Length: 137
Image (spheres, one colour):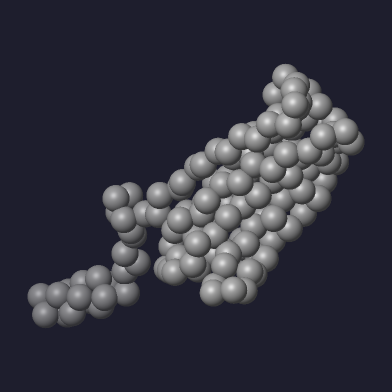
């Protein structure tokens, strides 16, 4: 009987799911860049995590205006990396903005860790424009 119980316990432990300890979980990195053209400015914040040889993009948000968060216009986001002389764009989107825009990227948006990546947000209010660039490393 004891042997049967021990065998059952071993089988139960062998089929158990092992949870990753919080210390081993991926760390979310958040970086912000600011640009300015005349009295117009923009701020871009990118969030990503590094997992399995890739910087996986989680999303980001922007604010713009003479007073951050109050200007209408367009914001264009481009996430890319460079390998030798080749630049590869992994995500791009252009949106109208009322001074604040949130970007959500597909879960497959990632930059290989072996290459230097950038995420650039170009703000345009119809009169002036500027680009805030965040390094991905």
